[in-house]
Amino acid sequence: MGDVVEDVGPAPRPAEERLVKLAGRGDTEAFAALAEMRLATAFRTAAAILGNEADAHDAVQEAFASAWVNLPRLRDVERFDAWLNRIVLNRCRDALRRRRRSREVQMDERAVTIAPIDGDLASLNAAFDRLNVQQRNLLVLHHLHHEPVAEIARKLSIPVGTAKWRLHAARRALERALEAER
Image 1 (cartoon, one colour):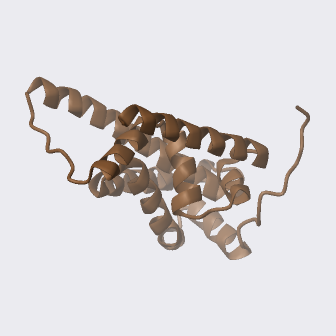
Image 2 (image 1 turned 30 degrees about the vertical axis):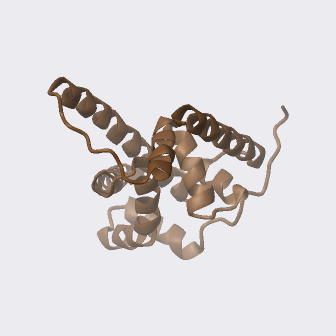
């Protein structure tokens, strides 16, 4: 494949870039403004990936704390959205790892689980749980947040064609996981 430069959507507005620069220099008010602008989207993404509001709150809180600490090292302020999205995804991965370890402990202690009432929804949730974080993120961004593929590519710092292929692969993985649940 050759190096193809694709237009993946508009760059952040100058006011946002200014906030990122100020926050990177330690301006807490600028960071608070950035966090307020991105909080709802970050939470919806984490909640959809983790399927649990409490875990999503924790993951987003950890992500924004990490962003604050590491923001001075962000070289390209235009990449702030993609950078923050990666941090949120990494915190979701961490939460899923902790959950897996917790499930193992609960199973050892013979914990009782309650089956969901709605079987179809339970199957979908179980199938979604089988997907990796990257697949969940793509499906959430496109189907829950209604983001166009070009915007997803911009946020993930990948070419549009790669985003299309990964979204297709994520849908197929979900289909296979649903088949396995039935």
